Length: 243
Ligand SMILES: [Zn+2]
Image (tube, rainbow, N blue to C red; front, side, top):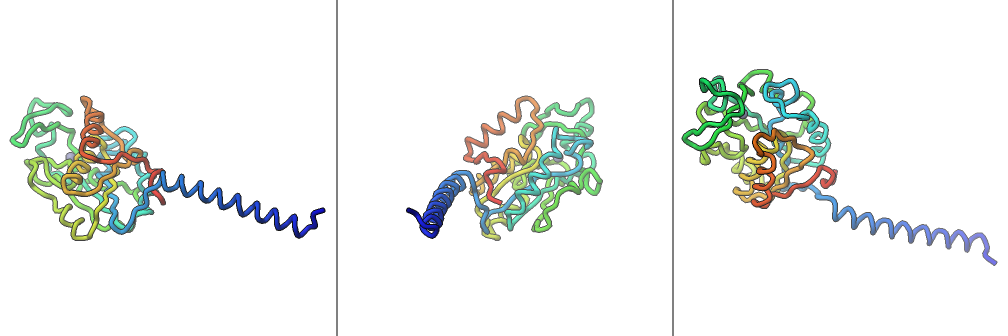
């Protein structure tokens, strides 16, 4: 016959066993599903600016939906850098600068094919401001790009001429950053070009898919994912990042 102490001891040991098993299982799941940002990791938040959000002149569909996701994952990062598209008036990437051309048409420029856009992110305008809904006070650097009137810059690293640098790679290397997590707008342009250049510069690179939204013109979104996969960019979801 069991006395009360023996029953309690048995229950305790069974309970402990279950807890150990549960911990082992959850650790295994955690290890498979989570990536933990460290001191050598940085989150790059690309162009979350009013012009690209609903109501803006170059609104990305559901663009505002990236903001809460980015705010959430940013809590896990010691290092955060944001970018800001920052054009002159009459910038070469604007359809309005090319008589007879309409937004989303392409033209050939000295540095290659350029998609023409509605006027957007003109320096000092409200449209160029970062979303007020972003809540990432630890952001260390905001890098502006596209400020040369005759050259566009989707990438946070290198302008569209393929050679003029923004200085970002040098900054990140000086800060000992090795892994980059890219989020923001738009997946198929500034996010993708940034991720591709990050690989070229030697960074381990992740794009957080649900923290981005695309424009998708003329098959651009599928092409961007294919190009990124080929370059070794890792496609992950925000839930893969440990908070
Ligand atoms: Zn632009």
